[in-house]
Length: 179
Image (tube, rainbow, N blue to C red; front, side, top):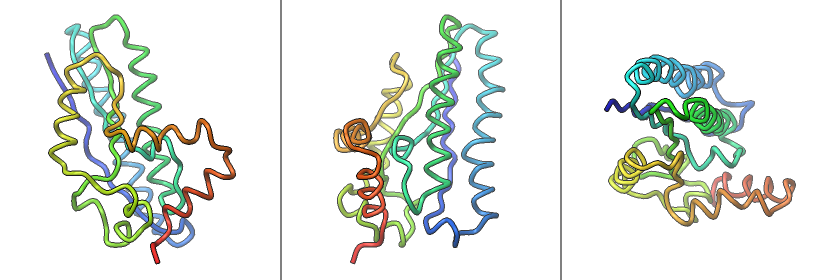
């Protein structure tokens, strides 16, 4: 059986009006367009063979549009929605498309600016080995998505029970630099 893990991604942190348009366009190209291309090419071959699995790496921010991560959180929301809808289309073909939704991970992805936010203070990055273990578990089970960790699951579900205007205040505070 063939497997594809779309794990490439970049992020930009900062006020939308101050961040680099070029960097954000490159982020959209890598986080969304490249993922669509690879998913298209691999899924077609997998469907012909009647088996395969594609895992797209989304994010906790797929569920939470976050201030100061405007384009990044939008790209990850795209990854989650795209993965879920293509998976629904492929039911019965032997091919699954899954989304892994980790929170902060202790890697070079985290910039010094990101590390200084309130969000990183209350939701500490986890070791990449844990994420890799959860990714392998997801790849070999029948679930369409996995939110890694109870804390991240809880955070991802807050918008369901919290009014939008309150939720955005919370998110803006979390995404702001800690004092």
